[in-house]
Image (spheres, rainbow, N blue to C red):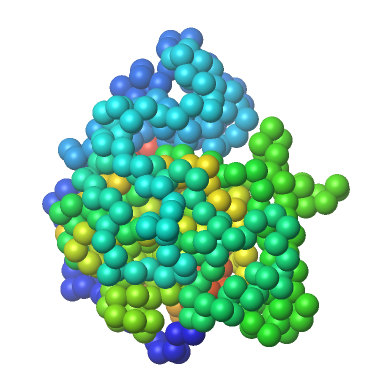
Length: 444
């Protein structure tokens, strides 16, 4: 296993508060009526804007996008995915709009869609997947430009696809012991981003997340010393659950059904050199998240969400794996509902010299500020300082006012505490801010 040396995040002398870069390209928010017109024909648009049961401020958030010179307009299919995530009312509208445009619910976006850029398909196979490591020595499995899309079809489950329904916990534990220092994740990559350099930021938009029809939750035997309460459960256990996409739930038992919220547990870039002791030159375990993102296990990273990740190495080098059907904050037994994906689809944008020190996430309803460290109190302090810096540099607040606002209106949550480094994330509701200010607040 890696040694216990302290993680040293990189900080920059920068007037953004050493976190969120102050580059010239800020981006200005505008009401995107063009998006609404593309997504909806008039009757559907009228229904959306006059739904009694939908808060109008929430609706505005979904038809607002940041105007950036480097970004093309969002197409209806990906925009409707974000709408569908907020609840049954939006889901019905999404399906109605799709049907008006001659689409169907299970169809894949066409590779020729110019708004996706070029679509690169990265299969999971012996040449593209490694067990439990980010290996920066590998030849890229693809090279992409800013604005391009990556499709990952038929991703592998843990232990190079050897975790399958029926495999007992003893075999799972043995596979972990047989690969000391490595994670259980089947890691796909790296993908090279043309023009990416240290100091840049990679924006990763989650366009499609479609799991297979099963998942597994397990804790290893106590002897492996994994999970929050390893000593309490010496025997270990694995439960395989069927995913029911009609009800959007997983049956834990006949009386307990867990709502699904699929997301990718691990997606990150090549880390900074001093983040962690390598297993060999250029190779680190996939277990601990850090300033490169990686195994953040942030359950809010569902379809329609975005992660902004600092670039530490030329080409950025994107790695991903560790697919989840759903997870609770904390992930206390060690695992989420682990699964694999029929398709993971992301779109990537490069922002030059933003000088971030940590990743930041965004959903239609929240900005999410991360703090990561082996000590959970330190992770909390990092998240709090990062959130104060975000509000001070983006929301026209003094740091003292930002401190107070976070105390009364933001939620600090334990992301996970079972991956060597623990995670805290701060949820800042966009609904706090008046429409005009909300449009001005952009991550990059």
